[in-house]
Length: 226
Length: 347
Image (cartoon, rainbow over all chains, first blue to last red; front, side, top):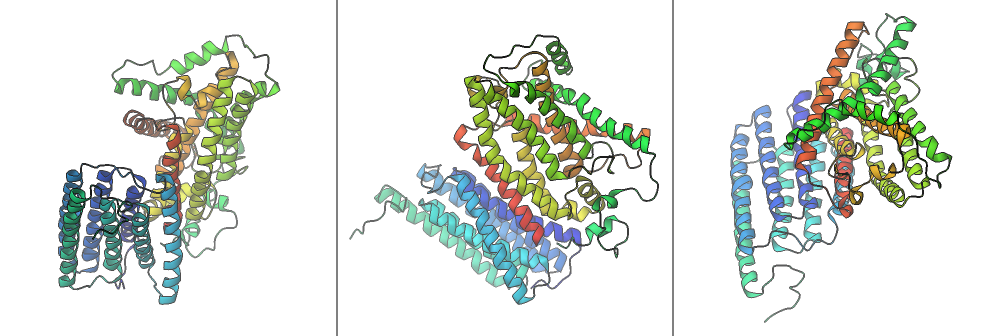
């Protein structure tokens, strides 16, 4: 729980950062180009890094500034770079597999945001969250998770699946930065390295699939091969 | 974000309950101006829009040409066009009915009515500006467009019907967003009056920088490009295949065409003014209504128009036109921004 009090302008800044992170996930829903998805993911990670740095500065958690630097380095730079390399190896820069048009999936995403607001509002009343910023963080967390799931459902390409998982993870991280800012540093580093392992394993898997099966779309991998 | 006290803050003291008439909150305290003065100020507001709208269009056209390395017409060209058209004869298609004659007059009247309702030069309401709120202004603006749409169908020309059907489809896509933006503005200021919104944003920087307001600005900007016939939806080149707005008025000639063109330029000027004076740059309006203040507000308004014109030129130059089946994408984005703004306001 956020224990320090915020002045109105800082509160506006916090909510702005949270909502910009939310908007960037809609870029992933609305664009056809995988390169744009990766750029949006990188930008989202940088925004979350800025948010955790701001929480660190305003709430006097010096270790959060360090975590912000780690976030920017790992999530904002290294992971997008690895993903870009995977995409370049595949020579596939467009997502051909979405089930819905970009505009429909964006409107669906907006519905999910409304849903998560309703959920966060209920939770906020139940948990007596006094700070409106906590409700906003809960909303953004649920919304990012649902949007990540939506991406996983709508798209079959392997790279999009990794991106969907990473968006879900980003949402949880964003929520934790505001709701429980005092999380141990060690835990954060473990999460970051886990992410690195996920992406590199997925990269190897995709490489293998591409070479052996000739496709990376999960819709075509419906047959068991012994 | 807790904005509940903001509306009360407008009337001066924080512990005041919300004033019965939000309009009264915007009135200047005490000193009532003389009746004649405010009427003159209201007339000045309407004249500002009517007389400077062609200049705004000319400036945008010229800058756009300059950016694309052409020479471009003079900024006074729209005035010359109006003068030239006013002297020509009127040719009416044999199939046209009275709608054909009524549409330009209705459109022009609607555009002359809206400036009465919005803060063009003064930041306090003038006589008759309580006729309608934001929704009323939107209704009158749409009425002008609707009249032209009917006229396009009425002429019986294939291009007219084509333009009208395309315009109707765009309206269907744009209207929900417009309503969402209005709802967002209403929730932000707890009032549907443009003057209240203007005062609130001037008085409270925290509201100005809040995500609710910024996303409303973004949603409104996308609507602005659609409603003022700019890219990514409307083409700046008038080939028949791209035409939307132009196709509806293809059958018009002479003074009627002049009226229609003038009305569309005024619509652009009005929407720019709402966007700038109410939402984006609420400063630089006359507070006391002195002659010097009004003149200063006029200069400030022209400067703001120029800024927005530069942004629009950038959009027009950098954007490519979307194909017909992707029209809903920018509008879906705008809808999304408006929904997010409403949600951010609720929190």
